[in-house]
Length: 279
Image (tube, rainbow, N blue to C red; front, side):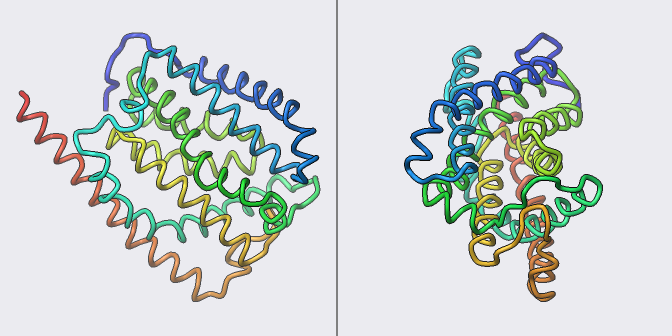
């Protein structure tokens, strides 16, 4: 598919990488500001880092939003369907896909760990979220997906689709999203998730399906961490779940994936019909 326009748009790929550099500098600054207060409140290092990341994403996104003269409404949902219709169309297939996505990403992370052995201290996933408390869980499951999707898909991918062919734009945005996580393990997961979410955004011109996927995936990670303790980057769900569990997750994922494809096709038909009516 051709890009929407050959004219210059901000940001392009190089500028997006620069934004990631600025984002990490702002994140470092935020962590420095909140560190003492966080430790006094009993928060662990990862919880403080998560808060700093969310604050940095929110600040950088807000600056870019105003720079592009965009509104929150147009950024979130620039589709012919109402937001209620879009959520209703995509919610069930995304929920069905989530367990399979969790298993796949878990195996991928451990696979990456075979090529790039973890040299730091291994963190128990349950301990991370228990020590982080409810605040870290809310940040992980709700606030982070919203802010990250608005920045990486709403601002960056939206601009890329106007400058590059669709596949190239999606791959670029997924790579930038992965690099923003600053380690090879998270890069692999974020890149894979970014490809899926990017494809959905390109098809629907709405951030809502991507936010749903991101939030459902993060929520599933937290639930599994609390209910089935495992070592981050060290164990896959294939090792700690019974065979029937992960097999069932893959079956549900197949059903959800088929349903998701159908939902995307329905969305495209509605968009095409509306375009013909307006012609």
